[in-house]
Length: 286
Image 1 (tube, rainbow, N blue to C red):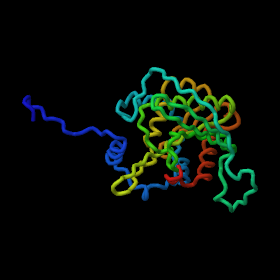
Image 2: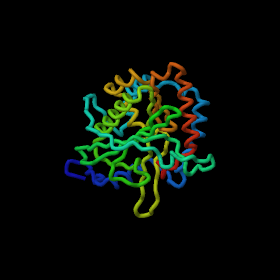
Image 3: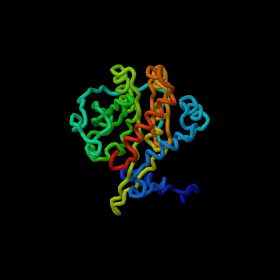
Image 4: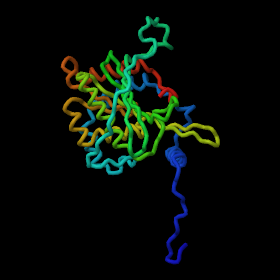
């Protein structure tokens, strides 16, 4: 205790990204990846169909909840000041391997459900890193599912690696600009995002701890970002925005494609297709 009676704070701050990740995993009691790695997508989609309240539009409701609950999320600070994204360029447009071949229905290991993937790259000046954005197009449901990662990460779990560069708003804004770019080329397409789970591998024990899928951190960040006025004002002109906590998934339904079907029907069609294509997700496949 000091002379003025104040107890000194001897706790050392977490300096490295490893220390911060370890503290976060323990603080939130992340389970072992071996026990929680598989997400039963098909089962969760069936549950969504049964719970009709989970299928309704959350765009305005969620915005009101943010105002009422100040401590909703401490993972990101989004300021009202507009921030531009980085310049991007398209680097590839590829069909999945073997797509041109006549594959038998039993050959499930060779089949892929997406029809084409568009790849974009941009350089984030703040973090001095190159990022890759992939937009997987599913023709049957006319939907792009978008993912991004730091290009220096090559593992199967590259989408779930935490970078901690503090440049999240500009990076998300660049992804949003790419979405608008694709929307011009595909004016009737829908878009979706899945919040990938973060993971932590303990160097001493070799055990991997995995963030739960439901309402995970990336999903909360994406949702908060889309609810900001700069993005929201652009989105509501062309899309209806839906959020599904159980799957940490955001879906943007294109209003131009809703002339022949209802929003609920379109949502059910997309969710059922994804559940059929990916009945289970394993964290090593993300």
